[in-house]
Image (cartoon, rainbow, N blue to C red; front, side, top):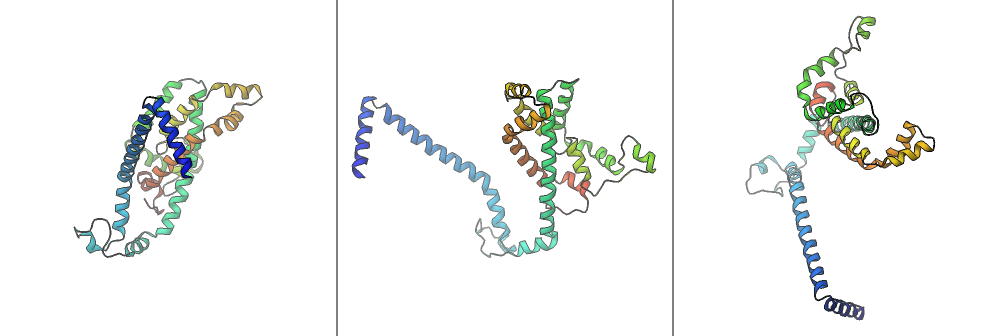
Length: 267
């Protein structure tokens, strides 16, 4: 083993002499770059994780530890009473289940419809295409709080072109249900839907059209080409959109307070 190491070092020295010292400089610069990159990544990870670790540490402290300036990270009086108290106050497990179900369902529907719309913008031509895409950009820019009153009134007195009121004599109250959430997602007007449309559109535009043309020559229609060819290639962007949608939905309090009412969520 030692002989092999010596032989490798001798070979390295010979190659370095032949290169006029360039090989050694390259190895040293590469090692320095690796060390600096590791330090930078460690620093970034620390900046990201430190607030989270600090909150976790605070959750295990008793009240007197919170006012003790000498305690920074490690609690002096360790307790899990805070978790018991929170679990009793907000019915934690029920709220956790509701949050997981609603966030997952809404995220899947939102990404599915945003993907269809994004593919349409990327590949098809239709009247006023640029104007409609400008509306998508406006959905990204304009905060939902600006249309809060309209959203509330629309779902509090829900009707479809006056048809429901014509047959029943009254409108439908969709408040305190998940239906407004689903309708907004299906019409790509949900939380950050415009961003997902933009992301999927840009991704589909980067896929070569020759793949679709080959599928059309093999007898595939638009729908089959989209399902069989484009969606498998779009797994990275679909995963990214789903993660964004799930996280934003999980932390959302604007739509949940407006529509869900008495459904308990962690947010």
